[in-house]
Image (cartoon, one colour):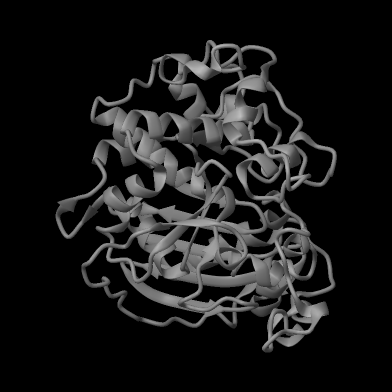
Length: 406
């Protein structure tokens, strides 16, 4: 759980980041010197990544945007009891979890929409690793169409990985994060391998302006540890190997595939973007909260919009059935008991239903509950990256929202 100082103290609008013509030097945020990832600058930069890094456009297409009907409901009087037993009012729960935006869609209607920090309806916010769930849908669609074999060994598609951890891994094992590898991933440790990996993906500046690695340079060097398929282990390289697989199998970059398969069909208001590594390979992506939730609504409705099937229903069904809960339990997530993982989605197994969840660092969440006809999108800019640090507050918030609407 994040502790005070509370988010209002670090409101980017009050602090004046990047304001003025030109802004004062002490208010300038830059990618090259990593000030974009410092605190409290982070509260501004996660809503402005596309102004700081090279990006590719996810085209929304030529058609009109699809309206989201409004039916506001009041949540300000709700009380949240955290997993640790602390009682918070609605406003304090939003503030202490560093919320940049929260949108609740019930039966296709917007019942709650608020923005904080640098957020706004037309501002595109980076979704961090929640993007992996988008890529998971693309991969499963290719499998359904016969363009990708779930049981194929990874080097059949990417020969460059023949001597890596993926030499004897299947596509489905990559999708489900069942890869045994030597990879130290701790966002709180500056010496962790994740930071070298971030530099290669383009999400952090290179150590030297004269030297750089592509993500395709780093992935072949990831070595195996243990056996595949024996335990869930969330590791960032899997996301980028899957992206490489989807590019090869779909014969297009991720940006084009997401645009053509999804974004041009959901009635998005805005183009999205992808951050690129130095060689043009996509890493994370950014969208407005409304469009983020439009994607969630497509998943909720079984991949169809107004009787037109956009994503195969079998793909959505496969995701929502979830993965092996016993394999997931071996990862030891204390805030996620009984959950599983399937096709790059976190799956919440409840007594009467399963909910699909896309999660990203610093508080990005897309929560899809088909049984209750509910989609919840959240953007955040918490000081520390791990999503689990926000579960104490946000998981109970999900249940309060659900109870009110059901």
